[in-house]
Length: 419
Image 1 (cartoon, rainbow, N blue to C red):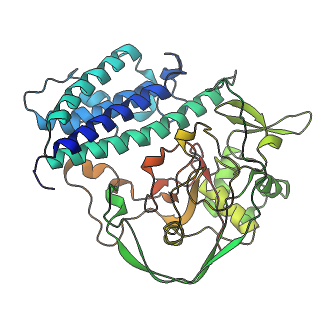
Image 2 (cartoon, rainbow, N blue to C red):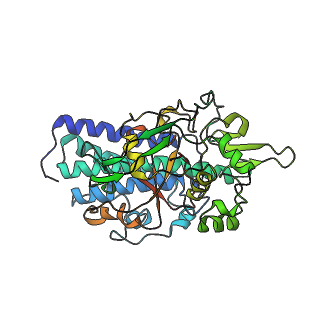
Image 3 (cartoon, one colour):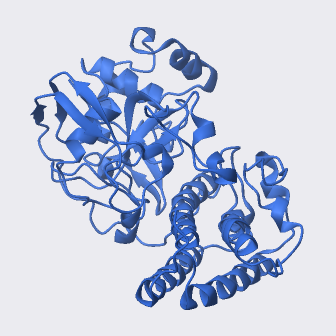
């Protein structure tokens, strides 16, 4: 990175983007009560107010504190209280205990956000070194990740509530009608390049761009629907050990899985319903929409049942690079997968791949504490691609690599088959 000062046009644009994106996080919390914002319903999730605080911590810790030695932090204890996992910055509270922080309250956290917003915004308007500008852009993408996590976490929190409240008190207007006929798209294979091409922002784990050799392959034109996944269930999918990876079968037995997360069967009628951010919806109304909230283990088992496999991340990226980034994203406001037209590779659901999350050949993490952002998680994780219905549209690209452990289900994850 250079130390040149950005142009006024550039800084003005970045300042506006900063304000707009920070406001979006607040708008996502508008339907929530202070009590809602305290809930942490599983160890992987975080309270909504923690998301608001941690994203603010990121800007204060990595930009304001480093940019100005005279900067006065909002609160001296926030440096460690809202640190997530940056061990080179400070120790931090255990993640599963975040819901125990009744103090600071929501109003103080909002005051913290306003304080940091004002301090950083006035610096962006007058111009900052390019290296600082790049950190701000990283911080904005970091906040977009937390916007998605916030929606995932509040969905899980409301699902664990016996009342099953809705985040949005609005019915689905339309979910896209019937799913497109599944077709197979053939790709020649051969030598290809994957990884970020250097245009625009990317995370360090998308670099360096490098060559891979692919055998000829085919991808399904759309993701697996709820109706197709129900057929797998009705054919004994959760009772057949031969379909599952060993650890997956152990997880099914230990957790008692018999359906995707958020599916529930009525004991009398046998009918299934699905919990959404708009409350409980009969599965019959969602049958043609992509199945979501399945783990890697479930995705892999379904692929075996269907006589297919999951794509590698290289196959997925080569195919997606030929498509525009269009689909159902957070900004569309549906906040649930819709039946697609059979052409999109982005949005709706994150798609599990058969690839372990590892560094690309020649990978180097960012220097300093920010090097802990992605690199240290390159163990026991699987790659997902494409974004989901709660991913901000401006956050996604063909080279974007998401990653979760293979038993994780609370993200909006689905299945695209390969052959």
